Length: 247
Image 1: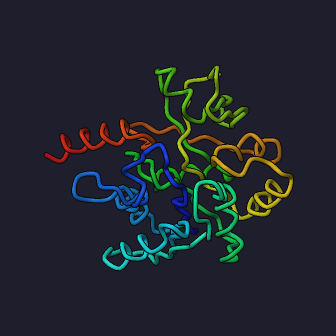
Image 2: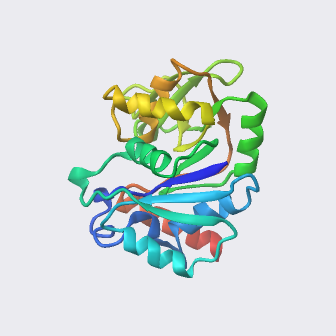
């Protein structure tokens, strides 16, 4: 299995904090956001290599960070060659860029470089092997405002996804879905098809409603915290939360 971390966005909602530094390399406590995510990946023996996709503007930042980061996994930084928010490829196009450039033909774990979560990725992999299908993750949220800012899934009694909507005006369930997915190797050609059909290449969740029409997708429901760092306010809130937990 390979892991792909999507980190090529420009995080304009976090300006001025992210104007000259990529969001995944902003600090929470004495470490950067990306390192908390990689802590989760390091513990998964099935993952052989990690690809972090960046843009041209911040590519050198990630390369410099990697020189000092000690990892048990092989980590490679990929440059998608975009240079501004106006010419960004979008998360799904970035995902395909890595698949195509690196000629990947393995199952993949896909994550965003700005979401922190508590659950163990190994448990997610065990669930995926049990259902033997593409999988997404989800957790229950009662806050309607938060649900409107994330992906929301509906599932049947077997946890198969029957509907999905990115940032819905009227959420159909309380199952919030962060960008943590497993796609089987048989699904990878469909990502090319999705893009060739002219579908939205941006937010990674946009692929899910299209995919569930073609393949079974299951939801692994987790417990514990999950923080989406998208604004200055959310970043400051997570800093405070982690400061309290680390003291």
